[in-house]
Each structure stands twice: as structure tokens, then as C-alpha cells.
Image (cartoon, rainbow, N blue to C red; front, side, top):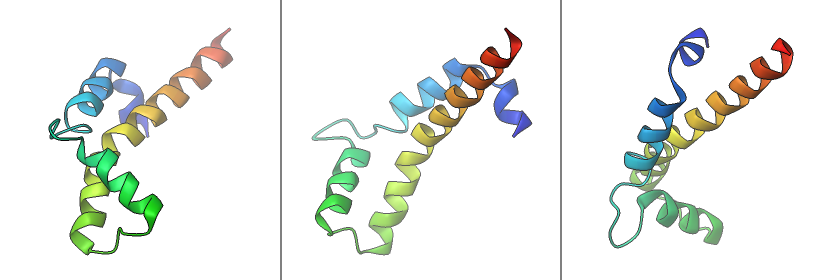
Length: 76
């Protein structure tokens, strides 16, 4: 996971806000798929793939922030 440490946080933030939320209208796909998951309607393979695709930038951002926090805490 060294490649995550070498990337700036801004890269993950931009990816999450653009790819993670696209398309913006009528509602972000990730939000739509999360609602489908919560209601038990996320059954089609295409919908599952779509959730993974749009959630990946958010997961990477969370991982980057967690690793950044851990590194900052151990440096002090």
C-alpha cells in the first residue's frame, strides 16, 4: 500500500467527488445503490458492479485518510 502513501490526499478527494458521485443528476449512483442495498433490492450483477465502481474512490479516500492519520500520530 506504499502507492497510496505516495499520492496526495487531493487526488483521492477529487476522485471521490467526481467519479464517486457521478452522475450528479437525478442523484449520485453511489447513493442510489446504497439505498438499493439497504432495502434488499441490490441483486443484479450490474448494480453490484456499479456500487463497487462508484464506492471505490470513497473507500480509497477513507484508506488514505486513515493511513495519513496513523502516520501523523506516530511521527509526533
